Length: 86
Image (tube, rainbow, N blue to C red; front, side):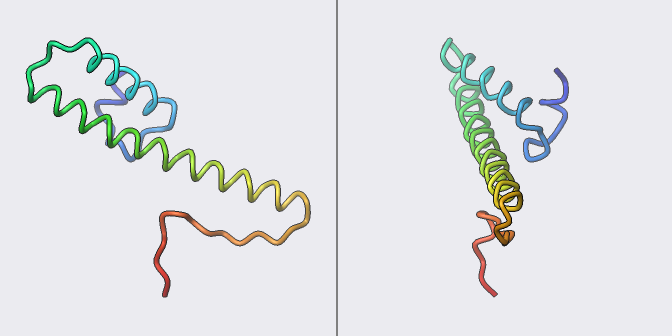
């Protein structure tokens, strides 16, 4: 599983990011790591959670758009993370 360590987190597909998050949590739960290692694992886990949440939000939006499109409702593409108004 070199993809998770060689690829930046923001480029990981959901399944790979989730698997890495699960491994990170499992390692933290076992304990016994030096403080610096535990902090690094916690930081990486937080970034993985954020990435997985973003991917899930994007997937949910895409599904809503597909459902709306199939029912004949006009679809407006709005990304939740854009948040900026021009």
